[in-house]
Amino acid sequence: MFRPPGWGCLFPAAVAGIIGAAATVSATTVSIADRGAVADGRSMDTRAIQSAVDECAAQGGGTVVVPAGIWLTGSVALKSQVSLRLEAGAILRASGNLADYPTNGFKHRELGETRSLLWAIGQTNVSIGGEGTIELSDRPFFDWDKLRTGLPPEKEAQLADWQRRQCVVTALDRPTLLIFFHGCQGVRLEGVAVKNSPCWTITFSCSENIQVRGLRIDNNLQVPNNDGLHFCGSKNIVVSDCIIDGGDDALAFTGITDPASLCENIAVANCVLRSRSCGIHIGYSSGKVRNVAINNLVIRDSSRGFAIQAGEGGWVEDVLINNVVLDTRMFAGAWWGKGEPLIISAANSTGRIHGVTVSHLRGQADNSILVVGQDKNVSDIIIDDVELGIGKSANAALYGGELDLAPAPARPSRMAQDWIPWIYAESVAGLELRHTAVHPRDIGGRKLKLDPVLKDVSRRHGP
Image 1: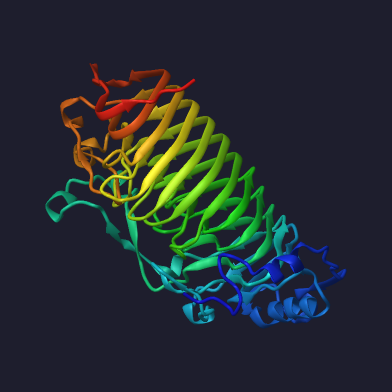
Image 2: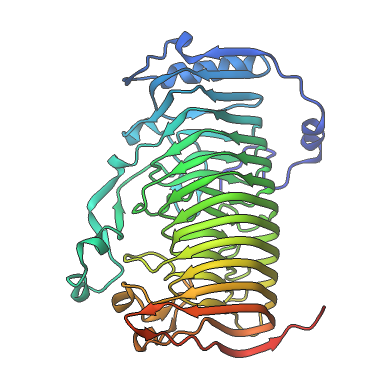
């Protein structure tokens, strides 16, 4: 993995001391229009925008203004003490040509060489804000007619047109981390709209002191990997008042960019999320995540509500989720998840999950709550004041044969026989269910059976 000298997931004490000191930021303000940018949506404005950023940085900091108009650009490096402000009516439009995204030296463990529209590595006090829009131009980077259905060829012919419109489109070579921060201290994003990302939309890797407020992220629901906000090995994070739609996770907290990193001290509040994958994903593979507080959410029309997961060597601990309304559905296509409102899983791994409380949740779901471990590596789980209507999806005939623990292997489901557990729990040390109520939705005059399944589960003891 690329790291500039002296930078990593843990910042040197000398650097931390400098960052902690009060910074003197110049009042320099530079409009990209005054540096030669042309708002016609055709002229490449990359050099003019980079020139404005460089000028502000050279003056000790300031604001780069993107006025109203359509400004076409390739990759731009953001710098310390510089704010990028998009005024009302401004559209910063990403190029549809991969050649306009040179690699920035960072290698992602899953996505390879990083190609970004806006990026910062090892910078301090960087911000993006305003009332304008960043268009990330997904159309040129996909084969929109080649679908990943998640079905064997002999069953694909059974898909109706409405089901095909839910399926995953196929990626071509594409930019990877479109708005990217690595090894940064003090990042603030506020107010802007971001649209149509071809891959991870906004990524924070090994960064600290992050505030994201009032963003509107509107991505295509058929595009894979277009996570809304993805935090890897980052600390001291506040996300609030955001509306996020997309094919992949709306919010994710993992350690993908550095398996030795720790993602911690996370607060999420007052957001509306929609995803063909997961509303909020906490933990993944060998990632390590702790100290997470989530409050006041609506998760709508999503494949999974919450996924809390640990793989080989990974762990998640101390997560509080409170006040949620959700609607989870089983979609056609090669998506992870089959309509589960909540999945807590360290199945088939040496990972562990400890200390998760989910309370005051209301909604509708097309599948079970799943709490699954191995050798009791999932522990101290509380589900309190949860009321769900659970029904059988119109996609169940083709996709309802399993309880989906992806990326871990699935468990078989008997949904086809009109029976599904409202909760399936296995190998859990300490599970407490308080004030739970589930109601079968009508399935053509028949009642779906919702009996719980608890295997090798011990009751949690405590107040």
